[in-house]
Every structure is written in C-alpha cells, then in structure tokens.
Image 1 (cartoon, rainbow, N blue to C red):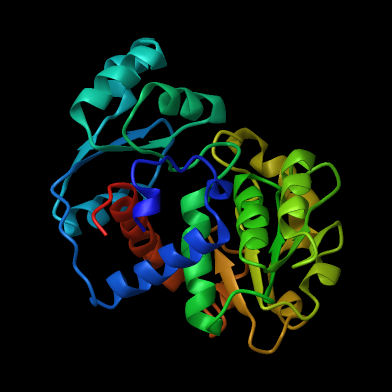
Image 2: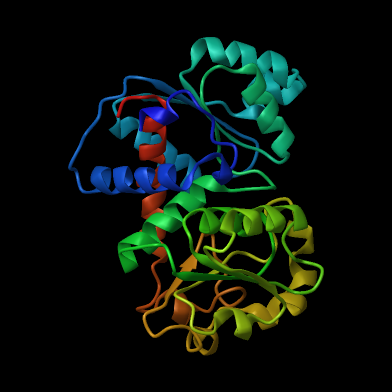
Length: 306
C-alpha cells in the first residue's frame, strides 16, 4: 500500500479499483488482528459539522495504531474566528502528520490539500463521504465474499452518501441503483463520472421508482431524508420521501440474501422501519464498526507504515 503514502483522500474516486481492494484486504487483516502496525503519528480532527461515528472511529483507530489525536474544535481555534484556510493549513502542516476534515464545501477541503503536504482525508463534505463508502464496501465484502457483480440499491435523498456509493460502487464493479423523489436526484456530474468509470463492467440506474431499484438487489441502503444543515427542511420532506422508506415490503423485493444498510444516525419510522433495522438482514452495526477498521487501514496506508 506504499503507493498511497503521502496522498490525499478527497473523493472515493481518488482511489483506483486495485487500491480500494487492497485497502479492504488490509482493513480485514487489521480487524482480525493478523497485523498490528505501529504509528507514532498525530492525527488532527477538524470538524465543522457534528459527528459521532466519524469522530470516535478515527480517534480509536489512531490510538490503536499507537498514535495521538488532537480535536481541533473550530469553536475553540482561530479557524472559527475567520482565519483564512490557507493560513490555518500551513500552520497545521507544521504540527500534524495527517488531518481529517468534516466540512460543508468540498472546495474548502481542496484548499487545505493545496496548502498542506501532509495527507488530507475527507471525513464528509456536502459533496461526498468516501470513508463511509470504504466501510460499506468492507461490509459487503464480508457478507458476500466479493464485490464485483453485486447490486447495491440506495433509496432516499441523492446526497453525499449517494455520490460516494455511485463512484465507489462503479470502481469495484458493482451495479448501483439510486431511487430518489423527483428533484432530489444525485448530481448529474457525479452520475456521469460514475457511468464513465463503470463503462461496460457494471450498470448505473437512476430512477424515481424504489421498487424497480430494489428488485433482486443484494443490498438496500438508506440515509436520513434531511442531511446536516437541512434540519429546517426535515418536516416538509417527510411526505415527499415517505414512499422511499426501507421497510419489510421493500426488502421482500430484493434477493433473499440481501442485507439492509444505513450510515447512521437513523430515524426509525422515517427512512427505515424498526423491524428492518433490528431484523436479521440488517448489517448496520457491522457497517458502523467497519468505519474504524477501514479508516485505520486508510491512515496506515497514507502514512506509509504498511
């Protein structure tokens, strides 16, 4: 994995198909305790948005690698008082070994990458959530033993998670189906990029019909109907997204071995029903755990210790 040393992960598409598979295999070895690399490095977490799983999984992963973590709360640092990103980036680059950023605008992340020599990781922007996709792929690989040829269906808002599913799924040869209400489709630019990556290897489907998307698929994935920063729209979105709920009826259309996925936090009774979330087909808790293992593999690779 030395090919990743010193690089950034701003998009899941920054990785090649081979690099994704290598990362997943490394994550599996780390999870099973087959290897235990030592990483006396310092990770900075700069989160402009709330976080539970991402913050904790990155922190525990770095601690388990033998490193340190500094939480750079924007409310307690100069970056939250208007210091230019360019200045913050160049200073942090003198202190830290690697920096994970959760922010709104993808351009802000790219500015950090332009002004830092250390690896920059996208811990979620409004455009993408690549680390989540690595954990999703690890969960699929654990469940089915392979990725190529599988069909993943995403039902709900065409948001950052949907974008990373499109790109990451295309890279590993999965068929990706996205079902959203009209006017809530994923970015046409991301769809076109995913279709170009997929080529003849796999299929990309964008539809307004959740039943069409679910038919015979191997995983049905959903996310909240209103992402962070859209909380004031949550109530108005409920009637629009109600037909896109992941419930027993929708799961019944999928392959008999299909799994249910959710990136969390979940609103039971809205985008997913409690019986599906707590049912035997749900791999949601494995998926959440795999955030830590996938990110541990990612950081170890970007830092060049494996």
